[in-house]
Figure (tube, rainbow, N blue to C red):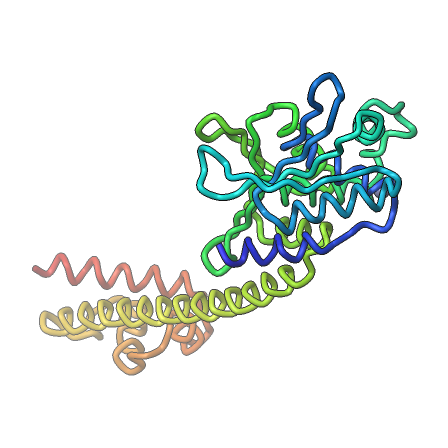
Length: 302
Ligand SMILES: [Zn+2]
């Protein structure tokens, strides 16, 4: 949880430079938890996190310096924590902000704010701060944004996908979930939204994880190969020794006698190495074929 909280705390401090981006981010807060009440008497944004509520207030003031705002604190009935309401109480102001936010969607294609990359980032940041979380990368790579509104989920999905990230959508207990599973994708999203400190933490965890995996893979791979080689050599030596108890190796066909003798003389050699000891050298599979003949013969000897 701490990682998610820290990421949000970091993002709550990011105030976009451009007017278009401020509106785009506000439109995300509106999409998730905003309401125009009483036919436009006032406009409310709800949030449970004080730092995000303050951010919404800052964004409104930055985009509309002349607009009056209020910050109300209420205790939520269903939940124990407090709800922060950012209110635009004057109808004319409420409409002004509301129109700008709606304009994000309803402006014609050329002016469509969410077609701009800078604004997409701002929208994603707003969506993540509204209903998002990211798991500590030490545990697993997972970032999600949820909402019960289908249109909003689609919008989030669409905006994340615009960056070629492999966003997926699913439902969970009546909510729609847009999520990312890839470490690369999560890193990109953190970077896009401006969570640079969180990104650094993620990258550090990744480096350590990758290194550990690589070392483990190498160790496993080498141990497995060595064990396999030793196991096979032991089986071959057993076979040859059993044959020796029944006959002289020189009684075998010359090619088999040769490889049998070499096996006994070089217990640690791989098949490839044994093949190189023969004159002229033979391939690994050639050696293997002869070994199988020897093993078959030894088994027939009972
Ligand atoms: Zn913008």
